Length: 48
Image (tube, rainbow, N blue to C red; front, side, top):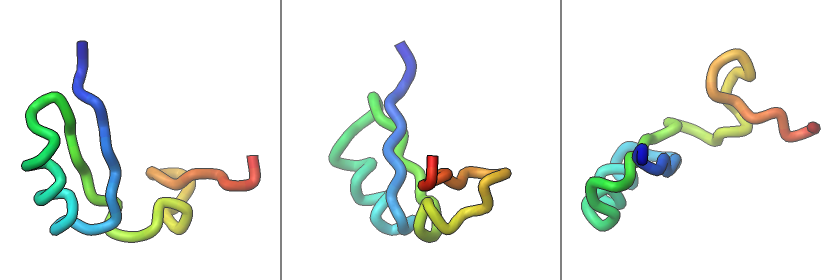
């Protein structure tokens, strides 16, 4: 089974949370609000 992905806003939060969650999780920083990212990349279409 693969790792679970957790997305947080900042890299510092990602590093700290990764320590608590352990190897079964992958914690990545969005470096901003997910809804503000370009839809062609990682953005979320909040209208649909």
